[in-house]
Length: 57
Image 1 (cartoon, one colour):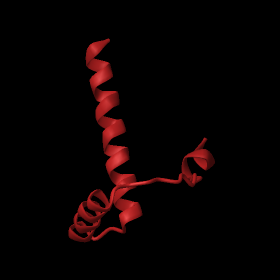
Image 2 (cartoon, one colour; image 1 turned 90 degrees about the vertical axis):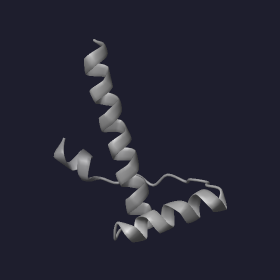
Image 3 (cartoon, helix red, strand yellow; image 1 turned 45 degrees about the horizontal axis):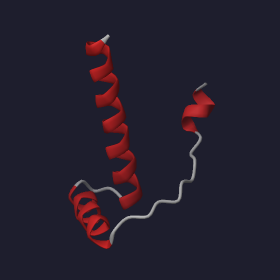
Image 4 (cartoon, helix red, strand yellow; image 1 turned 180 degrees about the vertical axis):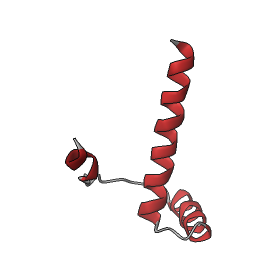
């Protein structure tokens, strides 16, 4: 399973120019690439969602 977690999937993603610009500025503030920032944000959202499900069960 460790190999599966390390493997990266490529996903085409379309963003509005304004959203991309906001993410790019945020990424720069956090010393990340835009791709790294998007991955970080998605990872945090999934963690938060999982946390919420434990409470609901």
